[in-house]
Amino acid sequence: MKLPFLSEKKVSGEVYCGILLKEAQGVCYVYQKNSHSIQLLKQKEFQFTDGWEHIVDDIDEALSLIEQEMGKQTVITQCIFFIFAHLLDPHTREIAKPYISKMRDISKLLELKPIGYMEVIDAVHEQLEHEKQTSLSSLVVELDDTQMTVFLYKAGHKIVAQHTVRTDNFAADMQSALENIAQSHILPNHIYLYDSTDLAEESSDLLLHSWKKNLFIQQPRIAVVPASTVSSALLKLLEKQLCANTSTAEAQDEKQNPKEVMGFTIGGEILETGKPEEFVSKKAFSFSFPKISFPSFRLLPLIGIPLLIIGFLIGFLFLLHRATLVITVPVEKKQSEVEILARKKPVTDEQVELQGFATSFSRSEKKETTGKRDVGEKAAGEVTLYNYDEKERQFSKGTKLQMDSLAFEIDDSVTIPASQFASDGITKNAGKNKVKIRAIVLGTESNVEKNKRFSVSGTSSNIVFGINETTIAGGTKKTIRTISKNDIESLQLLVLERAKKNALEKQKTEKSYFVLPELTVAKANKEKFSGEVGE
Image 1 (cartoon, rainbow, N blue to C red):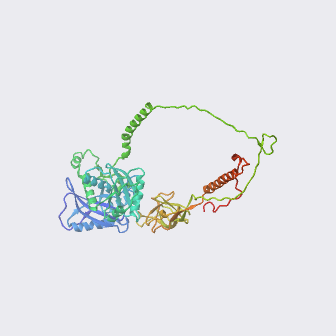
Image 2: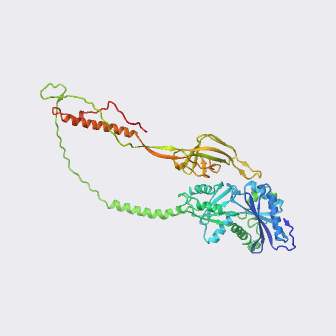
Image 3: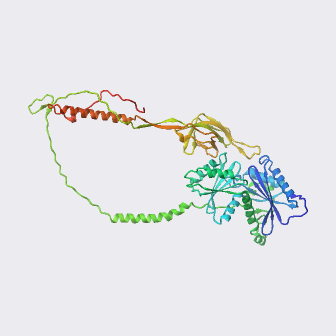
């Protein structure tokens, strides 16, 4: 693309156009390549006028403004794209087809030859390691308008890339993403945030957020990578790729594939092949980070072997240095028997008359109740359900919603419309609908402040989720003492036992009678309790 600058002075060396693309805005960089370095001549931020629909016109206007500011004749023939991670297909890790198509349009209509693309996270990663002079072991969060990607780095290696949709509650979005990562990894205590704009509000949200103990034992450190540092990181990585091996590449130029040098496509037009994979396969600045084992698993043999040896020695000493002492005590049995011959009507002088009698009396007893019962109200409120699926979702009354450890259910059946693409054909707007919910259990713990994220039972939280725009309130609970079934049964036994005891003591005053306790039985003819079970 030739830009008719005002002066006649011509910039020496190759001139490249770097284009940083996001959801709704971008940045144009103009670089000059010398023999062993690359210099940033100008940069211009620009907003998309209608999503990605008119992105070519937006970039053309940004380059025109750069032309006016530079005031000299410059020829830009090549371009490179800087992209955020959410523009990549999560399965193939290549640029998604809608975006690759737009990049072809940019190159073709602006007469720029694409030499490849570079992920911004790779440049930020190298910049952080350069500043710290050590391998990166941190969480790095890449933020866009409605998308965010959380990267987990361990010892300089990218272990996890967790993508999620942003809502109005950034701290809740972060916690949801980190909980997914924490299921299989221990989280480092340092978080870096970056965007091409200011992130003061987002960093403040994380600093004030109360994190769960299973995520961070103590409050994590939050650092913002400034937009200027991101621009500098892109320049350094671009310089490293284009200038590091210039002399070697020239010496071996005849031996290399004439179509490819240093991972860039040179010569034949990518735009004319008509195959999306061709553009993606010429990715000049992608880095492969082999996954490493989790540190705790590497320490397991170091800890386990000494423990095994110590356990073996203790068991060995225990088995060889113990004695068993058996003491046998002689047992002597003594028995005495008393025989009483009794009949209701004795027939000999040796038999005594066995008489039976019954007496009735009333008795009452009382005891402390031990039963407990919770009484109160269930918290209730309203949640807006968001649907990013391509088809509508229906949820019946009683469908479970989860917010951390709290469970709720919806009061009525609800239908959530399918998501729809915006006019640019790329940005997806979620379908949404409001529904009343109620806590499953009583208590104030089910009262939830506004802007919390809810998951729907049996549905991925990245596809359907809920946000309460108002507080969920009204939950109360208190515990009261009640009569339990065990209280009734124990009170019955207590009354019968004391009634029998009193009857035996009463008969001892009658000298002419010998009472047999074994044949004495107390029965309740009529029972009356002051309350029923549960009261």
